Image (cartoon, rainbow, N blue to C red):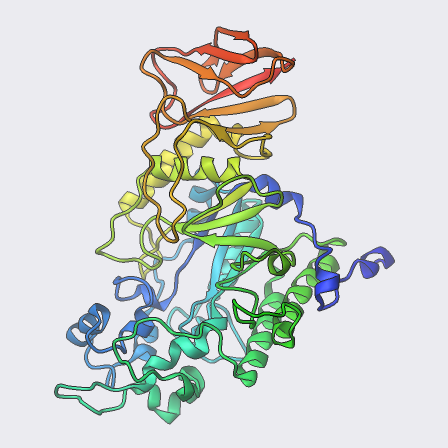
Length: 492
């Protein structure tokens, strides 16, 4: 390592890590695809299956009992053994993802279920020793690099200790009342964890709180796993499903010692990148909106976004359906995905979109269709997304996305709604809903901002006029895409 690289190393402290700056690759990428995939895909019955199968009365418990048997006899360890990933084709999928507009790829290292998708020396329940007998993370990384895509990983381990305690319970009524679930089996103590302190007396409770445990032994285990993961893969992105471990969201003192393990993991991520590249190319994502917390990396917002332009890049993580494959769940339509992406990018954000895989690793026909539709749209409008920066305002018009958590309803746009991005001297204007008379009117330019030309992406030059800053553009009758169209406005 050069002396310059050594001097750029980070310490595991707020003071050092607040000097972090986002690398250009992330600022430019704008759109990434995520594989939120693991043994919980096996039942094809949705997210949090590994927890809910141990909560009597929950739909996933009922499905499990009636499909596999009672969790005292057939538990989550047995679901893991069923996961084979026999049709997993990372090279073929990655080619589809890049064609569909992705400029980074992120795989899941582990979910809250404590099953690792890599050959861990710290946990025998991993995808090389159990189930697929494949290094899922390694295969994803090789495929991403073959396509020239930065590679990231997500970790959901921080919440595992409390979340995973449901396996210690038993039914409160019925033929198995009082019979311990298999999480109590001492043979699998290492997998199911010694988390009896978090078992809730309310067996109908479906969410684990507190999200992060105060168990210091588990904190140290988490840190060891993060270092193992970083050393194995040197990811360009690491995402934590929650705030920076392990401080409480309402911690009065953001410098408290409880954050020490999280700070050390982030510093290790960045320093590994510096050792590899001579400078830091890594991004750390976490979900605490307090600026004094997310200044060590990049803010991530799950299934929602920000109301306006953020001075620093940020990310929305979302999915086409449920987080794991779910036969009951409808998928988002391509137009909905595109409008979300545009609104996010206009506000200096990136979208990380989970593409659902079946347990064998394949994607279904509807998912292929979604990717093909995205690919067609990006072939026309991609220049207004990739490599752009926000303009001085994110848009014009009255319509707004809903900012309620986990609410992603499609917006009813109208002819006045526009979203902006920019690149050099070109201002891009996405027409969220073209007017019936095919006239676009943009009101946000000033009198001093003179337009040299206007081009409709995918169609060519358009007639325009400008008066007192207001730009009026005549669009062709037939538009190049059935989804949102975009004007490239060259400034004089």
